[in-house]
Length: 173
Image 1 (cartoon, rainbow, N blue to C red):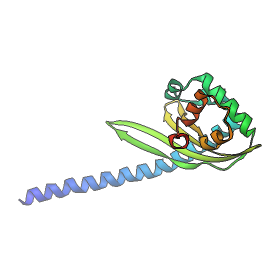
Image 2: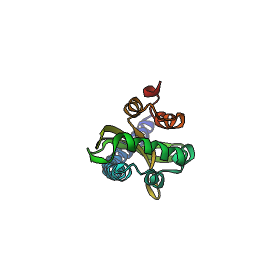
Image 3: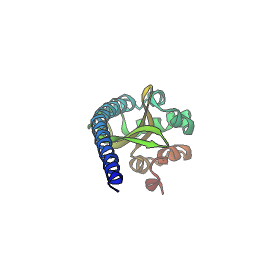
């Protein structure tokens, strides 16, 4: 029985050490990922919303974003946003974080940020979802405060409304 408790203690000590090492690794890398993803979010928002450049978003987007979004609809939506908001005047720093998840031995790094932006004709909260792959960060979702845009724009077509509502169903019901 003593052998059992001895080996059980050794195994438990190894588990505790492994958990401590894992926690240290995640804490150290998590802070670096937050800083890296926040910088990318700030830069991307500035590039995309300076003049509501749909092509810039398309270039920075992930394949999954491109798969569910039609480029023509994105251009049309950004045209309506350009009309309603005008050019970017200033943007607060991004708030949010990056997360690391491991599911079925597959690691995924994602980030979600909100940026409050001031434009020539109004303000909006922009939500940006990103994923990191071997090439770097890519945009998976880009949401303009759809409720504000839709309230101000009765001239949006059905396809533009659907694109605006894609990430915020509650504001479109």
